[in-house]
Image 1 (spheres, rainbow, N blue to C red):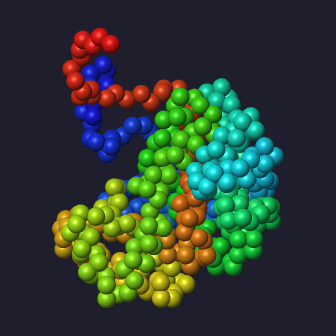
Image 2 (image 1 turned 120 degrees about the horizontal axis):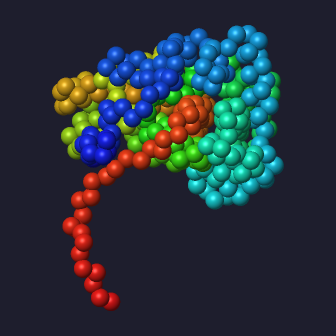
Image 3 (image 1 turned 90 degrees about the vertical axis):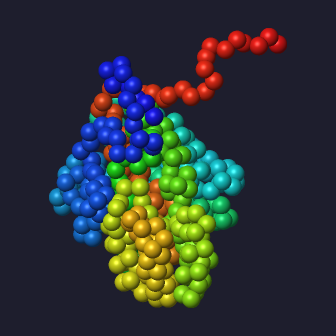
Length: 384
């Protein structure tokens, strides 16, 4: 794949693997170390010690909040959870389309941008961009849970200002205030998935932001990228794998058959990590804190799959990724499988928005090149 540098083409790897396309102060993924961070802090340490609101503030404002700032930010974002009437009234029709919450979110975000008067990021200042970002990120969980409930013939649950972000998400999803342990487990998952380098959806959001489009348009593009099963669709598929295997005595034969057939084992392998995914390690610990047959089975599947992959694909360093134990933790916390990827999206919207705001500070449009490999032109145009 060629790009241009000073007018001359430059070949780069397929998928832009390893290509540095810009500078960022938001974070990084160090795949060989099994480490990633948000700004200057370990993302996993943040997930273990801080609230979702703290990390949202960090990504938006650049620092962790003190007590006063934390209280103010939590109140400000909680007040933004309620949807404009134009968006709320359209949700039943969106849900009736039957495409699911993630696809419905694309339409709802477009409506939100129009209803809230989002303007192109090129035309507004940093303060207005940040206000749009907070409004969108606060609305995403409300939209997703409402679409899920409407799709099941249930009335949406209005958000509560007195609940933290993660607990409110579960409340809107189920209609009940969640058990604190499960709310905290979901909160830690949400924190751990806020941002993760220049993945496909984040890069997509930045490409659209580089055109100067409004924040809702950038987020719609990111959601479209996330909807692909190779990016955001694996948590429920990993859990489906556990269901298909069924019992410990079937693990070896089931996995070997699929690996030898060239099939991908969902929940294993990562394009960046060459060691254990730190998110998987943290989520395994959360799952083991709950305990139970599902957790024990997942741990045994992980052990045997890694051994089989090491045997059949030597040198590949294939370990569990975030999706494997995400499925287990979400199942233990009572989330339906069709909401696994939308829940990921509820967290990643914060990271996307931070990247959009950072990209908006650069007026250079992202415009790579491609190598033409079709029939050599010009060819005579045939007569009709």
